[in-house]
Each structure stands twice: as C-alpha cells, then as structure tokens.
Image (cartoon, rainbow over all chains, first blue to last red; front, side, top):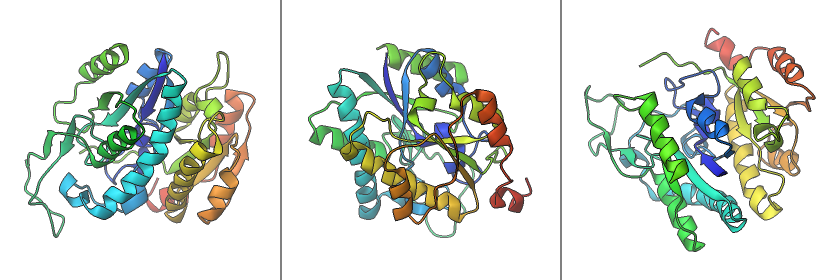
Length: 179
Length: 122
C-alpha cells in the first residue's frame, strides 16, 4: 500500500468553519476506506485554521487569494512537501486526499465568487463551486515541483458539495488508490 | 445546513496510535467512539528537519483551540512536541500512554467538559 496525506479536518472536524462540522471529531467514511485498504494516514495542517482562526467566516477562493495567504500556505506546503518527499524517497506510493469545494483544500473542485465581499451575506443559490485546486493544494504542488517530485494522485471528500454521494465518493477514492 | 456537530475535544495522538501495527492500539477508533477529534503527531521516523516544521504547525493550531476553550489531551508523545508547544505558549496537556483501548476510552470520557462546549450549551 502507501501513504495518504489527508486534509486535516477528516480527523479533526473541530477545525472546520463554524456550522461545518459533520461529526463530533472524526469524519470517517474516507478514513475508513484508507485504513481498511492498509494505507498509512498522515494528517496535513489546516491552512485556514492557522491563518484566519476558529472564528473565520465561510470563504471562497477570491477572499483568501492574497499574497499573505499564499505565503502562509507556502510555509505549510514546504512542511508537508518535506514529509511527502521522504515517503516518495522511501519508495512509498503517495496519494493526497483533499476536500472538494474548499477554497484551500479542494483537489479538483474549489469555490469561486469574485463578487463576494463586505458584510457576510450573499444571495442564495450562488454557484460557488468550480473546477480547480484550492490555494494550499496549489502551494503543495509548487513545493513538490521545487523538489523535483511529481504531484501525487488525488481524491476529495465531497460532503460539502450539492448532490454528495458517499458511494460515488468511495468509488473515486478507491480508483485513486488503485490507479 | 446541518447543525454543527463538533465536540470541542481534540486528542494530540502519536503516530503509532494512528497507524498502529497489527494488533496495536487504535486511537482513531477509540477517539471516534468517544467523540473526540485527532491531531496526529509526526511519525517517529521523520528526522528533526522534517518533523520540526510539522510540530510547529501542530502547536500553532493547538494554541488556537486552547484560546477558544477547546479541550486538548495528549496520547503518547513525540520528541520536540513540548518545545514546540512552549514556543506557541501552550502547556503540555493531560497525557496518557494507554495500554488498551478501554483505558484510552475511559481517559477520554473522564475529561472535564471543555469551556467552549459549555458555552455552546453542550
């Protein structure tokens, strides 16, 4: 098997934006699959918790897309890339498990709304999810590239997306693990 | 949106309890059963150059949780953790090196309610 570098909140729902914790502590569907298939788990830091804290508002990518947040994510990404590098050097297979729809942890879907600003109210039904990576994942990609290491296969927790389908999520994770 | 289900309880857990050897103590399962979250400590095979930056991030996040009245405990340990926590102004939390899952579960369930949970009415 190999090593799965997982988004912080999969093991620590307390790190999520207020209103976003899906369980008391561990959100286990993805964790259960990884462990059942014999993958080591290594938890990454939560980039938003350490930057805007527990009292942060729900945000889209544009609200975090600042030089300061990129520097912060770069610092965290260097720490994570150091760990990934060591596992790759040891010959381990590595996957990265993010959170789809997240402005920082999305691996194929992030969130975007260039009009979102000011007092935190926005129209219902704003289509904020869009293809792309979150800012932290983007910085991990850069940090690994600086080390000459290819970006790992990815999978994403989809519980925040409309139409979340746990079976489809599991199938996507299994496909990433077995690719 | 569903109501927020956080427990305000977080265990800093040594890697050998997150990725236990066959037959080893599984702290992730015990924490999930007791309603606790996990912050994993860097694996012991990481040298200080790799583990140090990861420990610094663990400590900064621990500081944010402490400041907001979340309850932290330490399961096992990790070289460099106490120093990293001290740099972030966080005391080493109550600690256990459990021999059985039952011992760990009892320890977690015996912790006082976190101030943040009381404030939130839980």
